[in-house]
Length: 314
Image (cartoon, rainbow, N blue to C red):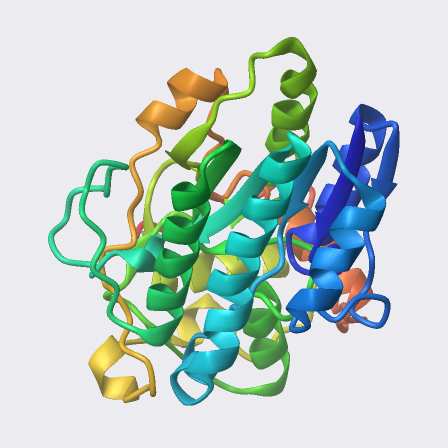
């Protein structure tokens, strides 16, 4: 099966390049220098030239605050591009896997959001991602949209990398404590995506909208504490440890973009339709911290401890 991957150098895309190789006969993953995704005419021409049987779209403008000042760019990459991809894949008779976000919801309440809940995004980023979902679904054809949340993995630009960088350079950290969701390891999502692609040939790939995340829930504050507990276990020399992480409210940060507080997604339907097991939200954290410690060349104070101390209950 011939596959085109867009966004292959991003947080999820790097893992997708590895996971998709064994399940495709040919994998094209053009970089931004090879294909400018802002140029929709160029994208259309590339899809028509390559004629993929499946297209996995991991490309997006994910800078939430930047989307407030550059809403046209967010709409171009998060809405217009997915709509074009859906049109082209329908014309080719192929399939499209597209990723979305929990930020299509307003974050009210405490219950995890279900696929049947009505979206009401609070910020420009969420509005652009919702517009992308609507564009893809309006075209129809063989499409799947997976909403996920709080991705982390091998890039320093994600939350895990930022917390580690701050902890080796600062004496204390402030992290919001009133946003709650499920951090989702990008490698697991990429593997599940490859399973979906391989299922296309068997006719078992689920189509439509699903919430695909890790299980459990945690605040950004407690997530940060867990990251630093793991880093300390692995011997990373920290200036600020878990006890130096201070909780702060989202409102106190006065960020340009409003954030939803309830970022929980209900993954029950995805478990049934994809026949998958949701990992715990921190299952991939040791590997992610280890990988980032190497790629970021973080200072090491001591050899890793022989046994892990259970994380403190917060």
